[in-house]
Image (cartoon, rainbow, N blue to C red; front, side, top):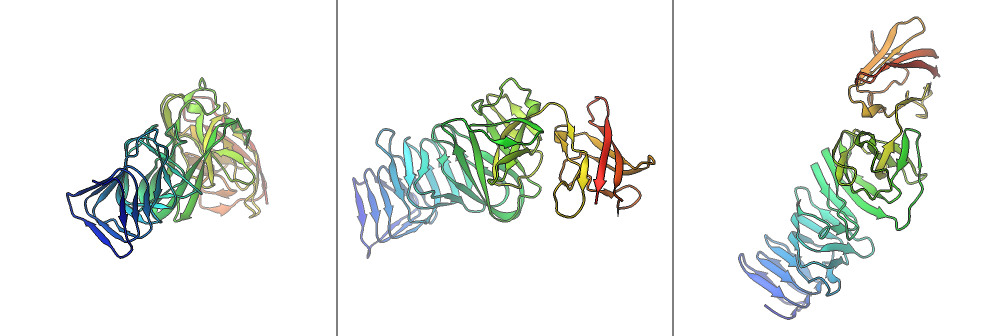
Length: 370
Protein backbone atom coordinates (compact mmCIF):
# COMPACT_ATOMS: atom_id res chain seq x y z
CA UNK A 1 0.00 0.00 0.00
CA UNK A 2 1.16 3.52 -0.75
CA UNK A 3 -0.12 7.09 -0.63
CA UNK A 4 1.66 7.90 -3.90
CA UNK A 5 3.81 5.81 -6.21
CA UNK A 6 6.31 7.08 -8.79
CA UNK A 7 8.20 4.83 -11.22
CA UNK A 8 11.24 6.37 -12.87
CA UNK A 9 12.07 5.81 -16.50
CA UNK A 10 14.83 3.32 -15.70
CA UNK A 11 12.70 1.27 -13.30
CA UNK A 12 10.62 -1.88 -13.72
CA UNK A 13 7.82 -3.02 -11.42
CA UNK A 14 6.33 -6.50 -11.71
CA UNK A 15 3.23 -7.69 -9.85
CA UNK A 16 3.06 -11.45 -9.53
CA UNK A 17 -0.17 -13.43 -9.44
CA UNK A 18 -2.06 -12.91 -6.17
CA UNK A 19 -0.25 -9.69 -5.25
CA UNK A 20 -2.01 -6.33 -4.73
CA UNK A 21 -0.61 -2.84 -5.23
CA UNK A 22 -2.95 -0.29 -3.63
CA UNK A 23 -2.33 3.45 -4.15
CA UNK A 24 -4.70 5.93 -2.50
CA UNK A 25 -3.46 9.06 -4.29
CA UNK A 26 -1.50 9.24 -7.57
CA UNK A 27 0.55 6.70 -9.48
CA UNK A 28 2.85 8.00 -12.23
CA UNK A 29 4.60 5.47 -14.43
CA UNK A 30 7.57 6.57 -16.51
CA UNK A 31 9.10 3.10 -16.51
CA UNK A 32 7.66 -0.37 -17.06
CA UNK A 33 4.86 -2.10 -15.14
CA UNK A 34 3.96 -5.73 -15.71
CA UNK A 35 0.70 -6.59 -13.99
CA UNK A 36 -0.15 -10.21 -13.24
CA UNK A 37 -1.83 -9.29 -9.96
CA UNK A 38 -4.22 -6.50 -8.97
CA UNK A 39 -3.57 -2.76 -9.00
CA UNK A 40 -6.07 -0.68 -7.02
CA UNK A 41 -6.05 3.05 -7.80
CA UNK A 42 -7.78 5.62 -5.58
CA UNK A 43 -6.45 8.71 -7.34
CA UNK A 44 -4.74 9.91 -10.50
CA UNK A 45 -3.26 7.33 -12.90
CA UNK A 46 -0.65 8.65 -15.35
CA UNK A 47 0.85 5.93 -17.50
CA UNK A 48 3.58 7.77 -19.36
CA UNK A 49 5.72 4.66 -19.78
CA UNK A 50 4.84 1.06 -20.65
CA UNK A 51 2.06 -0.95 -19.04
CA UNK A 52 2.19 -4.67 -19.81
CA UNK A 53 -1.32 -5.87 -18.88
CA UNK A 54 -0.28 -9.48 -18.39
CA UNK A 55 -3.05 -11.49 -16.72
CA UNK A 56 -3.74 -8.83 -14.11
CA UNK A 57 -6.59 -6.55 -13.14
CA UNK A 58 -6.66 -2.84 -12.40
CA UNK A 59 -9.37 -1.19 -10.31
CA UNK A 60 -10.24 2.50 -10.26
CA UNK A 61 -12.15 3.18 -7.03
CA UNK A 62 -11.93 6.91 -6.34
CA UNK A 63 -15.04 7.60 -4.22
CA UNK A 64 -18.03 9.76 -5.14
CA UNK A 65 -17.54 13.41 -4.15
CA UNK A 66 -13.78 13.43 -4.63
CA UNK A 67 -13.99 14.94 -8.12
CA UNK A 68 -13.21 13.15 -11.39
CA UNK A 69 -10.62 10.39 -11.16
CA UNK A 70 -8.10 11.18 -13.89
CA UNK A 71 -7.04 8.20 -16.03
CA UNK A 72 -4.37 8.78 -18.66
CA UNK A 73 -3.45 5.33 -19.88
CA UNK A 74 -1.54 6.64 -22.90
CA UNK A 75 -3.62 4.66 -25.41
CA UNK A 76 -2.58 1.27 -24.00
CA UNK A 77 -4.56 -1.82 -22.99
CA UNK A 78 -6.00 -3.37 -19.83
CA UNK A 79 -6.57 -7.12 -19.59
CA UNK A 80 -9.28 -6.66 -16.94
CA UNK A 81 -10.59 -3.29 -15.76
CA UNK A 82 -12.90 -2.78 -12.78
CA UNK A 83 -14.81 0.46 -12.14
CA UNK A 84 -15.94 0.94 -8.53
CA UNK A 85 -16.21 3.55 -5.77
CA UNK A 86 -18.68 5.75 -7.66
CA UNK A 87 -18.01 9.15 -9.17
CA UNK A 88 -16.63 9.95 -12.60
CA UNK A 89 -13.59 8.29 -14.18
CA UNK A 90 -12.22 10.71 -16.77
CA UNK A 91 -10.11 9.09 -19.51
CA UNK A 92 -7.55 11.29 -21.31
CA UNK A 93 -6.67 8.78 -24.04
CA UNK A 94 -8.24 5.82 -25.82
CA UNK A 95 -8.64 2.84 -23.52
CA UNK A 96 -8.58 -0.77 -24.77
CA UNK A 97 -10.11 -3.77 -22.98
CA UNK A 98 -8.51 -7.14 -23.78
CA UNK A 99 -10.69 -9.51 -21.71
CA UNK A 100 -13.26 -7.85 -19.42
CA UNK A 101 -14.68 -4.55 -18.23
CA UNK A 102 -16.47 -4.83 -14.87
CA UNK A 103 -18.88 -1.95 -14.25
CA UNK A 104 -19.76 -1.89 -10.53
CA UNK A 105 -20.06 1.76 -9.48
CA UNK A 106 -18.82 4.83 -11.37
CA UNK A 107 -19.13 6.37 -14.82
CA UNK A 108 -16.37 6.37 -17.42
CA UNK A 109 -16.36 9.78 -19.11
CA UNK A 110 -14.02 11.14 -21.74
CA UNK A 111 -12.18 14.22 -22.79
CA UNK A 112 -11.83 15.10 -26.50
CA UNK A 113 -13.96 12.12 -27.63
CA UNK A 114 -11.53 9.45 -26.49
CA UNK A 115 -12.92 5.94 -26.91
CA UNK A 116 -13.29 2.72 -24.96
CA UNK A 117 -12.35 -0.10 -27.33
CA UNK A 118 -13.21 -3.78 -26.77
CA UNK A 119 -10.96 -6.28 -28.49
CA UNK A 120 -12.62 -9.27 -30.14
CA UNK A 121 -13.76 -11.62 -27.38
CA UNK A 122 -13.72 -8.99 -24.60
CA UNK A 123 -16.85 -8.93 -22.44
CA UNK A 124 -18.81 -6.43 -20.32
CA UNK A 125 -19.96 -7.38 -16.83
CA UNK A 126 -22.48 -5.14 -15.08
CA UNK A 127 -23.78 -1.85 -16.40
CA UNK A 128 -26.43 0.31 -14.75
CA UNK A 129 -27.47 3.92 -14.19
CA UNK A 130 -24.66 4.25 -11.64
CA UNK A 131 -22.02 2.58 -13.84
CA UNK A 132 -21.67 2.89 -17.61
CA UNK A 133 -19.66 4.70 -20.32
CA UNK A 134 -20.53 8.29 -21.19
CA UNK A 135 -18.63 8.43 -24.47
CA UNK A 136 -17.89 6.49 -27.68
CA UNK A 137 -17.63 2.69 -27.38
CA UNK A 138 -16.11 0.46 -30.07
CA UNK A 139 -16.53 -3.31 -30.35
CA UNK A 140 -14.46 -5.65 -32.51
CA UNK A 141 -15.22 -9.15 -33.74
CA UNK A 142 -18.36 -11.15 -34.50
CA UNK A 143 -21.48 -12.28 -32.64
CA UNK A 144 -23.71 -10.23 -30.32
CA UNK A 145 -22.08 -7.01 -29.12
CA UNK A 146 -23.07 -4.82 -26.15
CA UNK A 147 -22.25 -1.11 -26.10
CA UNK A 148 -22.69 -0.05 -22.41
CA UNK A 149 -23.29 3.65 -23.08
CA UNK A 150 -25.28 6.18 -21.07
CA UNK A 151 -25.62 9.91 -20.48
CA UNK A 152 -23.89 10.07 -17.10
CA UNK A 153 -27.03 9.43 -15.06
CA UNK A 154 -29.05 6.97 -17.16
CA UNK A 155 -27.86 3.69 -18.67
CA UNK A 156 -28.89 3.53 -22.36
CA UNK A 157 -27.10 0.49 -23.81
CA UNK A 158 -27.14 -0.54 -27.46
CA UNK A 159 -26.88 -4.15 -28.62
CA UNK A 160 -26.04 -5.31 -32.13
CA UNK A 161 -27.14 -8.89 -32.65
CA UNK A 162 -25.71 -11.45 -35.04
CA UNK A 163 -22.60 -9.86 -36.56
CA UNK A 164 -21.21 -12.51 -38.92
CA UNK A 165 -18.32 -10.59 -40.52
CA UNK A 166 -15.26 -9.65 -38.46
CA UNK A 167 -16.03 -5.98 -37.85
CA UNK A 168 -15.23 -2.91 -35.80
CA UNK A 169 -18.27 -0.83 -34.91
CA UNK A 170 -18.62 2.26 -32.73
CA UNK A 171 -21.64 3.67 -30.91
CA UNK A 172 -21.91 7.13 -29.34
CA UNK A 173 -24.96 8.49 -27.51
CA UNK A 174 -26.08 12.04 -28.37
CA UNK A 175 -28.43 13.73 -25.86
CA UNK A 176 -30.28 17.02 -26.31
CA UNK A 177 -30.97 19.39 -23.41
CA UNK A 178 -33.94 20.89 -25.30
CA UNK A 179 -36.37 19.00 -27.56
CA UNK A 180 -35.32 18.76 -31.21
CA UNK A 181 -37.44 18.56 -34.35
CA UNK A 182 -36.48 16.01 -37.01
CA UNK A 183 -37.93 15.17 -40.40
CA UNK A 184 -39.27 11.66 -40.89
CA UNK A 185 -41.05 9.66 -43.56
CA UNK A 186 -44.80 9.30 -43.71
CA UNK A 187 -44.73 5.76 -42.30
CA UNK A 188 -43.88 7.42 -38.96
CA UNK A 189 -45.99 9.67 -36.76
CA UNK A 190 -43.19 10.70 -34.38
CA UNK A 191 -39.45 10.34 -33.67
CA UNK A 192 -37.67 10.88 -30.35
CA UNK A 193 -36.75 14.53 -29.77
CA UNK A 194 -34.50 13.63 -26.83
CA UNK A 195 -31.64 11.50 -28.19
CA UNK A 196 -30.14 9.44 -30.93
CA UNK A 197 -27.15 7.13 -31.20
CA UNK A 198 -24.35 7.63 -33.75
CA UNK A 199 -23.09 4.51 -35.54
CA UNK A 200 -19.57 4.19 -36.95
CA UNK A 201 -18.78 1.07 -38.98
CA UNK A 202 -14.98 1.25 -39.19
CA UNK A 203 -14.73 -2.03 -41.07
CA UNK A 204 -16.76 -5.15 -41.69
CA UNK A 205 -20.52 -5.27 -42.20
CA UNK A 206 -23.81 -5.16 -40.31
CA UNK A 207 -25.69 -6.99 -43.05
CA UNK A 208 -28.20 -9.41 -41.56
CA UNK A 209 -27.96 -8.01 -38.04
CA UNK A 210 -30.60 -6.55 -35.73
CA UNK A 211 -30.13 -3.67 -33.32
CA UNK A 212 -31.65 -3.39 -29.84
CA UNK A 213 -32.36 -0.09 -28.04
CA UNK A 214 -33.75 0.77 -24.58
CA UNK A 215 -37.09 2.48 -23.93
CA UNK A 216 -37.28 4.74 -20.85
CA UNK A 217 -40.41 6.81 -21.42
CA UNK A 218 -38.43 10.06 -21.68
CA UNK A 219 -37.98 9.91 -25.47
CA UNK A 220 -40.61 12.58 -26.12
CA UNK A 221 -42.97 9.94 -27.55
CA UNK A 222 -46.46 8.94 -26.52
CA UNK A 223 -46.19 6.34 -23.77
CA UNK A 224 -49.83 5.37 -24.39
CA UNK A 225 -49.18 4.30 -27.99
CA UNK A 226 -49.39 0.53 -28.55
CA UNK A 227 -46.01 -1.17 -28.20
CA UNK A 228 -46.59 -2.68 -31.66
CA UNK A 229 -46.22 0.81 -33.15
CA UNK A 230 -42.81 1.43 -31.57
CA UNK A 231 -39.98 0.93 -34.07
CA UNK A 232 -36.28 1.61 -34.39
CA UNK A 233 -35.57 4.33 -36.94
CA UNK A 234 -32.48 5.38 -38.86
CA UNK A 235 -31.21 8.34 -40.86
CA UNK A 236 -28.09 9.70 -42.45
CA UNK A 237 -26.72 12.86 -40.84
CA UNK A 238 -27.17 14.98 -43.96
CA UNK A 239 -30.02 15.53 -44.26
CA UNK A 240 -31.61 13.99 -41.17
CA UNK A 241 -34.80 12.22 -42.29
CA UNK A 242 -35.69 9.18 -40.24
CA UNK A 243 -37.17 5.99 -41.70
CA UNK A 244 -38.40 2.86 -39.98
CA UNK A 245 -36.26 -0.25 -39.44
CA UNK A 246 -39.33 -2.01 -38.09
CA UNK A 247 -39.83 -3.99 -34.92
CA UNK A 248 -38.79 -7.62 -34.56
CA UNK A 249 -39.92 -7.74 -30.93
CA UNK A 250 -40.67 -5.51 -27.94
CA UNK A 251 -40.21 -6.50 -24.29
CA UNK A 252 -41.34 -4.59 -21.21
CA UNK A 253 -43.37 -1.40 -21.40
CA UNK A 254 -43.24 2.01 -23.07
CA UNK A 255 -41.63 3.42 -19.92
CA UNK A 256 -39.22 0.55 -19.23
CA UNK A 257 -38.67 -1.72 -22.18
CA UNK A 258 -36.46 -2.78 -25.01
CA UNK A 259 -37.03 -2.94 -28.76
CA UNK A 260 -35.27 -4.96 -31.47
CA UNK A 261 -35.28 -3.86 -35.10
CA UNK A 262 -36.60 -6.03 -37.90
CA UNK A 263 -33.93 -4.83 -40.35
CA UNK A 264 -30.21 -4.09 -40.22
CA UNK A 265 -28.81 -0.59 -39.82
CA UNK A 266 -27.49 0.97 -43.03
CA UNK A 267 -27.25 4.63 -41.94
CA UNK A 268 -25.25 6.33 -39.18
CA UNK A 269 -28.00 7.68 -36.87
CA UNK A 270 -30.48 5.49 -34.99
CA UNK A 271 -33.33 6.36 -32.64
CA UNK A 272 -36.85 5.39 -31.55
CA UNK A 273 -40.03 6.29 -33.43
CA UNK A 274 -43.73 5.50 -33.59
CA UNK A 275 -45.44 4.20 -36.71
CA UNK A 276 -48.43 5.83 -38.32
CA UNK A 277 -51.50 3.66 -38.07
CA UNK A 278 -52.11 1.28 -40.98
CA UNK A 279 -49.93 0.73 -44.05
CA UNK A 280 -49.25 3.07 -46.95
CA UNK A 281 -48.31 1.85 -50.44
CA UNK A 282 -46.17 4.12 -52.60
CA UNK A 283 -47.68 3.11 -55.92
CA UNK A 284 -44.94 4.00 -58.39
CA UNK A 285 -41.60 2.41 -59.25
CA UNK A 286 -38.94 4.03 -61.40
CA UNK A 287 -36.70 1.11 -62.38
CA UNK A 288 -34.10 3.18 -64.21
CA UNK A 289 -31.02 2.14 -62.25
CA UNK A 290 -30.53 5.28 -60.14
CA UNK A 291 -31.92 3.55 -56.98
CA UNK A 292 -34.48 6.32 -56.41
CA UNK A 293 -38.01 4.94 -56.06
CA UNK A 294 -36.48 1.61 -57.07
CA UNK A 295 -38.89 -0.57 -55.04
CA UNK A 296 -42.58 -0.68 -54.26
CA UNK A 297 -42.31 0.78 -50.78
CA UNK A 298 -44.97 -0.28 -48.27
CA UNK A 299 -44.84 1.74 -45.07
CA UNK A 300 -45.30 -0.19 -41.81
CA UNK A 301 -45.32 -3.57 -43.60
CA UNK A 302 -42.56 -4.92 -41.37
CA UNK A 303 -44.93 -4.66 -38.39
CA UNK A 304 -46.85 -7.56 -39.99
CA UNK A 305 -44.29 -10.37 -40.03
CA UNK A 306 -46.71 -12.88 -41.63
CA UNK A 307 -47.53 -10.62 -44.57
CA UNK A 308 -47.74 -11.79 -48.20
CA UNK A 309 -47.54 -9.46 -51.19
CA UNK A 310 -48.70 -10.53 -54.67
CA UNK A 311 -48.38 -8.60 -57.94
CA UNK A 312 -50.49 -9.28 -61.07
CA UNK A 313 -50.25 -7.94 -64.62
CA UNK A 314 -53.19 -6.38 -66.45
CA UNK A 315 -54.37 -9.80 -67.65
CA UNK A 316 -54.54 -11.11 -64.10
CA UNK A 317 -51.44 -13.28 -64.30
CA UNK A 318 -49.42 -13.45 -61.09
CA UNK A 319 -45.89 -12.19 -61.78
CA UNK A 320 -44.50 -11.68 -58.27
CA UNK A 321 -45.17 -13.01 -54.80
CA UNK A 322 -43.22 -12.90 -51.54
CA UNK A 323 -43.89 -13.65 -47.89
CA UNK A 324 -42.38 -11.35 -45.27
CA UNK A 325 -42.12 -8.28 -47.52
CA UNK A 326 -39.53 -6.00 -45.85
CA UNK A 327 -38.79 -3.08 -48.24
CA UNK A 328 -35.24 -4.39 -48.48
CA UNK A 329 -34.17 -7.87 -49.60
CA UNK A 330 -37.78 -8.98 -50.07
CA UNK A 331 -39.30 -6.25 -52.22
CA UNK A 332 -40.79 -5.74 -55.69
CA UNK A 333 -38.29 -3.98 -58.01
CA UNK A 334 -40.03 -4.46 -61.35
CA UNK A 335 -38.87 -8.05 -61.92
CA UNK A 336 -40.98 -11.19 -61.86
CA UNK A 337 -40.26 -14.15 -59.57
CA UNK A 338 -43.16 -16.37 -60.70
CA UNK A 339 -42.54 -18.63 -63.69
CA UNK A 340 -38.94 -17.48 -63.88
CA UNK A 341 -37.10 -14.26 -63.18
CA UNK A 342 -37.29 -11.58 -65.84
CA UNK A 343 -37.58 -7.83 -66.23
CA UNK A 344 -41.21 -6.76 -66.48
CA UNK A 345 -42.27 -4.17 -69.05
CA UNK A 346 -43.38 -0.70 -68.02
CA UNK A 347 -47.07 -0.45 -67.32
CA UNK A 348 -49.76 -0.72 -64.66
CA UNK A 349 -49.85 -3.68 -62.26
CA UNK A 350 -52.29 -4.78 -59.56
CA UNK A 351 -51.17 -5.63 -56.01
CA UNK A 352 -52.84 -7.63 -53.25
CA UNK A 353 -51.45 -7.48 -49.70
CA UNK A 354 -52.40 -10.04 -47.07
CA UNK A 355 -51.18 -8.72 -43.69
CA UNK A 356 -51.47 -12.18 -42.18
CA UNK A 357 -53.39 -11.00 -39.12
CA UNK A 358 -56.92 -11.74 -40.29
CA UNK A 359 -57.60 -8.17 -41.44
CA UNK A 360 -59.09 -7.47 -44.91
CA UNK A 361 -56.81 -7.70 -47.94
CA UNK A 362 -55.27 -4.44 -49.17
CA UNK A 363 -55.27 -3.97 -52.94
CA UNK A 364 -54.63 -1.33 -55.54
CA UNK A 365 -52.59 -0.40 -58.60
CA UNK A 366 -48.90 0.35 -59.07
CA UNK A 367 -47.26 2.10 -62.00
CA UNK A 368 -43.94 0.68 -63.24
CA UNK A 369 -41.81 3.12 -65.24
CA UNK A 370 -38.55 2.47 -67.03
